[in-house]
Image (cartoon, rainbow, N blue to C red; front, side, top):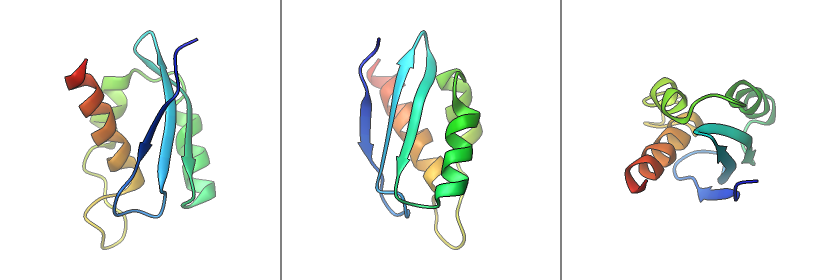
Length: 85
């Protein structure tokens, strides 16, 4: 089993996200704090999705008048991990 990645989020209601990557796919995504219904649904939809696809789909999503969102923050984390590779 791959290790759990935990990352702090900035500028959004959720304070942290955790997930694992197995075979290039997201597993066990969990947001801490934030909108529980929406973030639980998002985590379920992301389960098994290729990391690059998730980053592409989530990047640039905003929330209300904020310049980012929990989704966008996760995309940024995934992109940083891909670059660090």
